[in-house]
Amino acid sequence: MPQTSAGGGAADSEVRTLRLFVFALFFMFGGITSLNDVLIPKLKALFTLNYAEVMLVQSAFFAAYLLISIPAAAVVARIGYMRTAALGLLTMTAGCLLFVPASSSGLYITFLGAIFVLASGITIVQVVANPLISMLGRPQTVHSRLTFAQAFNSLGTTIFPYVGSQLILGSLADGGGANLSGSALKLFRSEQTQAVVHTYLGLAVALTLIAALVWLARRKLTETPSEMPTLSHYMSLLKLPRFSYGTLCIFVYVGGEVAIGSLIVNYLMQSSVLGLGSEAAGHHISWYWGGAMVGRFIGSYLLRVFSPGKVLAFAAAAVMTLLFISANTTGLVSGYSLLAIGLFNSIMFPTIFALACEGLGPRAAEASGIICVAIVGGAVVPFLTGRTADLTTLKTALIVPAICYAVICGFGMYARRPAAYVQH
Image (cartoon, rainbow, N blue to C red; front, side, top):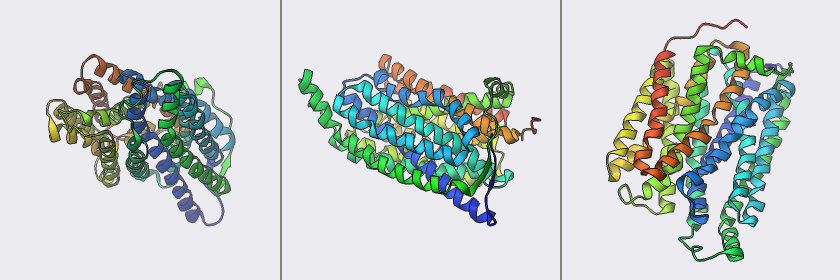
């Protein structure tokens, strides 16, 4: 991957500016990702989908990580971090614009296509952002710095669902198209998705502006292009037990986190839980992601004091406990124990990422490409959870993410001691 350094004479000033750009990237891709949790109940109602079918929203979104991550890492090697970030932002813009023809078509599959393109851009940005924030500071504080950067990701995931639930779910029709068919049904769906179109057009404008700013700042980071790694070069990293176990944990963590977030609206609408309407339940998504934001600010301190592995194991065990409580209670206890999971999710992604990449040195950027492939867990685990919900109940389906967090708990204990530097 490219060798990097902050350009110019005022290195500290350049590093601070670059950190601000990276924080903005975390904010945007986090917020847009969390909007899927608002889209899911909207599309479920309009297209009369079961849980497994509507979870294809997450499958389409996170499939991009499987297909795009390694090519994105290769692009970083060729043109550098900042130019690749601008490319990713423009790809996200294209995905947002595709919601216009998707709405006009009135077909579910066209929405999945738009979501995939949008996610492809997010994948490119994320391949850049994780290793870049690791480089912009001292190696001793990388765990804390990644967690702090993820707090801006969580700020986006807290704000976007609240606003999105008002814009998108506030216009959710209650069975209005149940008796329609043919062209009338197509027109109804097109009209009902205008709120979705307007939301994503606004995001397209914001993304274009950020892409322009990133492009103008591209020379603040001095980069020397390197040869694009081969597939065997990437695969050699997976022979390292700590890295391969960490990669598995990214798969199950993203899958578990996304599965829970995707079900929150429908879960809280159940009469045995809170019995809320769709818009009110949508507002509660912000509690889930807001907990992650608060937890990341707290976690950035705790990770300086305690072993990151032990903090990770404790957080995973706490999530398993909360899932058990939610599945076996009713009312406020059931609803808010599920929402509280966000607090403990907070430190997981950056901590797993940093623990998995610990000791890899200059190969950390290549490792980021592989780890971003593992984010495809967000395409697999939510679908399995939705299928389980269709066959049983939403409460019973919580066992799927619970298994995921058990794997993470084991990794935390395994990686509780610092890794030795790997010779390259």
